Image (cartoon, rainbow, N blue to C red; front, side):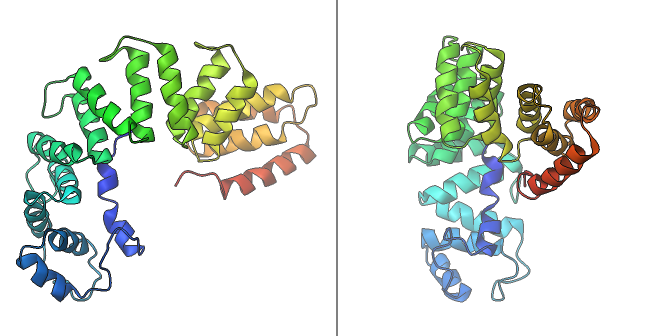
Length: 296
């Protein structure tokens, strides 16, 4: 299951990339500090974020994680949603504050109650794991549903897992497939892989290699090593009559490069059935794919 806690910490990277996440980039930090000290909750949040961008010339260089958490807390205490969500992540990870899952839940709930989708997904994941709270699948499903109602693909994927396993809901494989389809159609890699596997194996649906290939390809093109391996195997089966294994070899090589040992073994078997010309073409295609389809 994918969680969104680490996504909150990518804000500092977004700042350095010039993201619109920071609304007052042109405002001097000295003015931001003055606003923050005067109680402006947005300025307090933005100051904490700017402190993470240590190459800003007018940010004091002696700040600490504690300074970040101080300004984030001041903003969160005034009800600023972004600060509440970020502060929850700080407590969850123990960054600038003592690690405290209970406090993380508290701040995530405050943000989630305001409709923050990342906090809703975080809460679902926390209740699944039982960190800082008793494990409670019903509560997890509640928060995942709130996020899924906002078309959040991570929550849709998670609901698929809940239905597939019967956690907090009556087990329903068809419902799981439909939730995964919703997530997959929004580009969620794990859901795309699941659909590829389900159609390839005929699990809960009629076996359909064309549909399996479609979903494996979508995930493979986003860099998913497992999907690249399965796609390579499917293509090698489809191309057996023509002995054209070039694309299959390229996908298997890419998957193997990312640590998939099964893909490496399958590629070596395929290699024995290819001549030198085909291997040369396959290697060229592999290098093309390597530049496009390696997961960052």
